[in-house]
Amino acid sequence: MTAIQHADIDGNPDTTVDATWTPLLTTPNHPEYPAAHGCLTGAESDVLTAILHTRHIQVDYPGAVGGASTLTATRHYATANDLRREIVNARVWAGLHYRNSGQVGVELGRAVARYALDHYFQPRHHGKHDDNRQGDH
Image 1 (cartoon, one colour):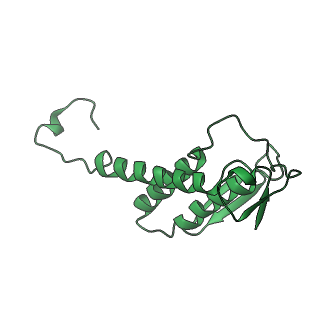
Image 2 (cartoon, one colour):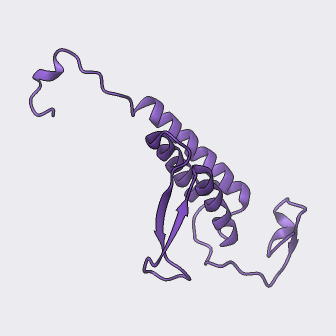
Image 3 (tube, helix red, strand yellow):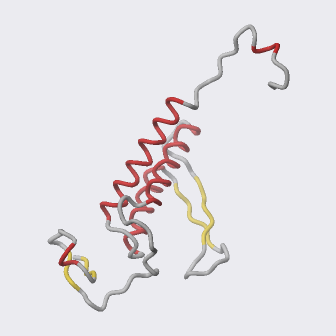
């Protein structure tokens, strides 16, 4: 069971009101739904999967600890799913988004990535006139 300040209005019977609860980070002045960071990470995870031809992406991201502005820590993600799961959890745990907003954001980002990969990042097919163009190397 999770306790949050406005649990009585979140529509989830598994949360309880705790008027003393405060978020880890100051709640930013941006839309809660869908979670923008989830959109970015969802797209990023699918692009990495496509580029590397595997869901086992083995990627490291630098980050800051305890609100510091200096990057002093590194997080490792073995799979694309690990990356997506952690971004949703992190945004919930920090008090920035409801879980559904993060999950919807991730799926929106993934859909955008798939569309872009399918429609814009295709192999270039050289025609007989392509070799004669100036400056196209």
